[in-house]
Image (cartoon, rainbow, N blue to C red):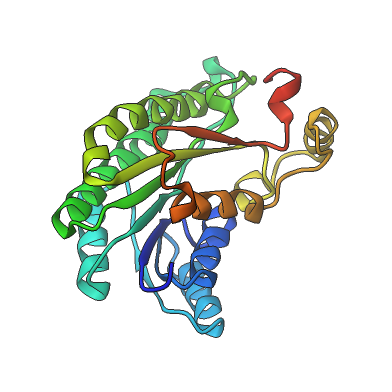
Length: 249
């Protein structure tokens, strides 16, 4: 991806950080976006230490003006946008009767509306630049399976799986591809508070008998943005170590 530009949201930690570093190792200049400036700056420093180019842009993807500014600043800084990994996400877990409409609205504002806003601006920029491009979003195995306590989160990710099929048909004629990665349980700051017993149960149900590391998912997101995946679009790719083989739950 030398000479290309990649945008990563939720890029300060976890899967987003792994993907940002992955893009940089393949030669792309990287724009790292998220809400926590210190974490973004740390990733930029890591990329710079590798000899790459990167900038950090603080962004809340639930705010439309932030999303517009993020994509505009990316193009202004580097002159192009070739790849986007829309990874930022929010979650509120709990039994449905314990959750509130505010919980629902906050998750949807980031996971559905925020990603839709990003896709829209990325498509506008890619079409204007005329170089095609690749967009990847982070979905989840929760979109296709079922788990207690994930009624909001799973719904938001199911919306993304539906969204990309429609967008793929709209943008394919301009050589723009759009796909999702759908991780299983992954060791990230978002899952750090989960009980170790849950990790053990998932590990035992997974064909590869381990929990995903951020790089396991980030590398697939990067691959989907390379020419090696040039004929892949509208797909939600499971990256779950074979968890779903034994039945999603």
